[in-house]
Length: 381
Ligand code: PLP
Image (cartoon, rainbow, N blue to C red):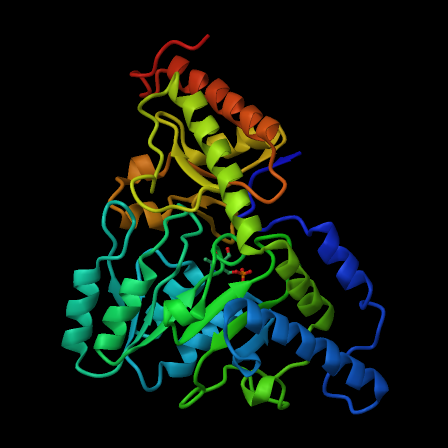
């Protein structure tokens, strides 16, 4: 199978598997006082320190969770009782839907997919008290990178707090909390070759923080529940793979592969829209529209060709819905319903991307011959 859906989840790296394998047979409960428990505690705190050093924070600021969804829910719900919420319209559903349920007001984005800083400024001014703002660093559907330092500057100017969902940024670009000035930041392991079942919320200051999960005193009483130590060890093993130099080299590779894909399809489909390309963007992600063919039909064809890609967000019925991110960027409904997402990972090759582009063109030819609206493309060889 050609797997190009790494923004959904990636394949566990062999180094991560080895690190997890070394501990997975042990009885690891870091709250136990016996020898095995002390070993668990030592592993947990070692992993916490590695992650804290990597993100330039203190170890006590790292709260391990079972997913990024949990970390995001924790962040929003922790401050919702005391802070008005503002979330951007392009957030992942675990932030957007949670925020809306909690009565959040939304911050719109422009046609490039970038949050409107003037709207943020005006909304924060009109709120009149300290708010919690949640803006993601890298969008999971388009790869658009938000100007997070400017967002932080505005939020601080109004005395508010900033939560950053950095799930699609972690391990792909440098994240330094000294620079970003976020009060809370979410990461996850499984988008870059770590295991599913672990995430972390970085919490700079726990004053007024209401835990989502209560029970035992794990994670300094801020997140109850026995820590998943093999997964946490897997997360910390990633750190050796995601040095600044490694990420830079990886980004260059993705950039080249992305250009190759776009050039290949644009030879015959110059009108095919590639979304988010007019601003800073994570090069592993290509959100591309196929004029004349719906995303769901495309996904079926790609699946038959043994190529895994995705579109918008799949609802629980498995039916593909047009991307709320594209809609927020002002893309008309019928056009948004023709977009698919190709997302590359650490092991993606030139040949895989080329095969995907060729299959895209085969489909595009079908769309043209069906006369379903893709009239302006050049003839295919
Ligand atoms: N935030 C972003 C930006 C994501 O891309 C995802 C997963 O796609 C999540 C949060 C939620 O991650 P999980 O489903 O692993 O909890």
